[in-house]
Image (cartoon, rainbow, N blue to C red; front, side, top):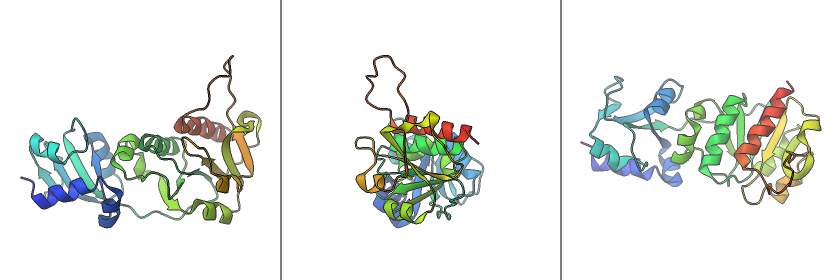
Length: 240
């Protein structure tokens, strides 16, 4: 049986302030949990309807009814784990860095984290207005890639000002990325879903780039930020 205190703690982790207060976050789904168990992250507690055969002090076998009480999903999986938040590492400016300026959608952030993992981007830098990477919906969307990308939340304007590398920003009116000179190291800034890159960050961009539209009508207004990130990273990485 789950105690009231356990239920209260787990359900509170749906909110950012309690995740930060406790230094904990929730992961659901057997595949993702196993991937995190195999990483350097520290397990706090595991609640499951089918034993993982790990340390009994950390694992609690519960009923499906109890799992439903603590799950954040409409249709609960067979397990829910609570992990300790990792401390971010120092940012390496010798490689390409992806920076997010107020990306708000959890699905977009989760997909971008997966893209960073796929394309070998070690550092993802987020403005403080960007959605929390430990949001349960973000964790679901990363499919385990959260363990392989170093994510830092910073004052983005200050960070970009202090790093002596070229700064590329994604803009509709930017230069064609396919004919632009792209270095091995630098910062690639992606903007907010509705408003793009803010004026403060735009002032720090050294190179504005865009993805050309090839459709005959040229009618599509814009690309989803995660889709655009995938295309731009592919082009950056293709060069090296």
